[in-house]
Length: 95
Image 1 (cartoon, one colour):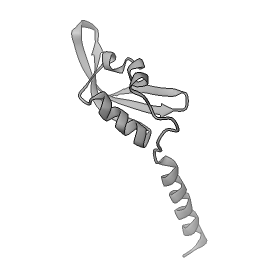
Image 2 (cartoon, rainbow, N blue to C red; image 1 turned 120 degrees about the horizontal axis):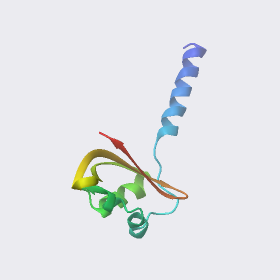
Image 3 (cartoon, rainbow, N blue to C red; image 1 turned 60 degrees about the horizontal axis):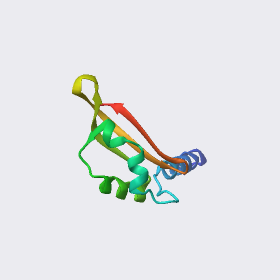
Image 4 (tube, helix red, strand yellow; image 1 turned 135 degrees about the horizontal axis):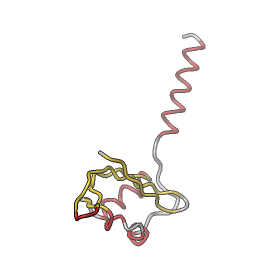
């Protein structure tokens, strides 16, 4: 195997391991999840316990949900919840 191929394989291996999610240092509590007001802003089928389970094992979760908008309507979105050392980060992306 040439050195160029070995270099590319090494870089690929490092990128794959760097992209993996890891569990947070401090487990996320139900109270911390509720402080995000996520369940008021979005319609989510998963329970808080299911979300906490994934957050505490993988450090992040992406959910399908609906964002509440004016007039009582909803818009379909993907909701990303990321457990960081500073707390939970919640963001949404249109589907």
